[in-house]
Amino acid sequence: MQKRKNLYLVLDLTQHCSQNDILHAYNRAKTTYSRDSLASYSLYDDNAKEGILKEIEDAYFVLGDARKRQAYDIAMGFVEGSSEQIQNNFAHDTHSFTKPEPKEYKKKLEITPQIKVDKNPAFEEEIQNAKSLTGAFIRAIRIYRGYTEDQLAGLCQLKTDHILALEEERPLNLHHPVYLRGHLILICEALQIPRTAELAKTYIVKLQQEDKLARSKSL
Amino acid sequence: MEGLDSIFSVSKEETLQKVQQQPYAKKDLRNWPRIWAVGGGKGGVGKSLISANFSWLLAQEGKRVLAIDLDLGGSNLHTCLGVNPPRYGLGDWIHRRTDNLFDLATPTAQPGLMMISGSSDPLSVTSQMEERKKDLFSELTNLPFDEIVLDLGAGSTALTIDFFNCADEGILSILPEPTSVENAYRFIRMAYYRKLLLCPELKNFMPVIEEGADTKNTLGVRSPSDLKEIISRLDPVAGEVFERELAKIKPNIVVNQVRTSQDIEIGKSICGVCRRYFGINARYAGYIDYENSVWKAVRMKRPAVAEFPRSILAARISRLTKALLGEESAIFPR
Image (cartoon, rainbow over all chains, first blue to last red):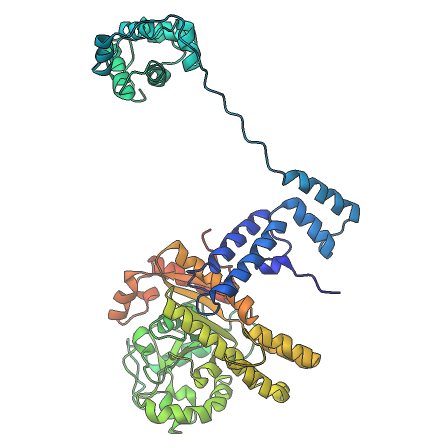
């Protein structure tokens, strides 16, 4: 019967090491036998190093996972345990190694404007060349684009109250002024207003000048 | 012997008296000196720096220490220890001008520490040293010291390797540079094969070992650890002897001139490679930072630990000394 390889020795460890030690030893071993490693270039050629790296990966595949490691330790006789325990461990492993489902991200809402408005080139130009942003200007653009407050709130995933508060320049009604800049950018993007960050800044500065908003660095 | 009058206003008699009065270290129950050999394979890797500072710190701990410069071609340990070039050195013992090594010992500014300088005429000495190396070790074991530190020369000559192998503890100084690492492996390889070739119990396997030592061998020996398997297969008893001999090679790795965290990691990697390739247990004893205090101390002709006791370098060497003595484990950042 062929003697089974001690995987701990592959990573230069003993069987009493922690999972953290295994991770560190694995990283070190990979560095040691990497192509441009100072420690091994004169003793091993690239082919030999590839073979060693494969051994290291195989060892880490088992020891890097606590359940697989436990099963291996029992199989090697490093710790006491039953064959059922090993089977259970591997049964768990098949679950743990199944590929996780890709995370479902919130789909961007597709809302069609309620009111159809004819294109006004002069106002479009005004939007494109806007140097500052006010509540009234946001409301005018919203109406021009054909959105209701609720629709815009849905597009930006904000509350309708927030949209109204911003249009009426009542920032204190927002749940926290620190979010103001973010909300403004979202609205500008939804209403296709260019230079979002720059214009959001003008809105905040105006409120600060009117003492409607506390001067804060975070804004 | 004339000319052995001291420096730093400490006479030889005075130091001798102090050396003899000092009790053995409490933990150390051995009644023979422990011999340390500091090698490195390449020149300029800090062998003399480590030897000088290590000896100094051992003496500071209350041990009776003798540092011997075995770099017969380029001896300068005396400079690192702050001693003027002594008139007498190891060459006088090799040429049988004196039979007592202790006559050659020169005191240093550190109480308890004495040193024997190398030879000033290396050409005639090296060949004769080969004949007298056995005598040297038997002489050393009779000297009244707790610790003897041998500062070996550069290169991997048979003479240097034999001194390294015969010592109780070997220290291998390595720089985090390709040339140094390559030479250090060559040094270990030589130490490995020299150990096996000089083992009388493996005499019958001499042809196999010699063939295995050849990198273009036909035995299929790709690394020295393969040779172990071949010999174990041929004769299990010889395989056990082989393993026992290999267990004696356990160099303490010291990485010198460390500049980055990757440089510190090289020591660990080298130990891993030694285990896999040679099948030997090298131990990473510590590292020494690349620091200005080293050259400043050398220019002042003083050991760095004495001249800059509060420097990082002194702290590192102190830690290294404790790790080598087994008093504290070596600490490395992760």
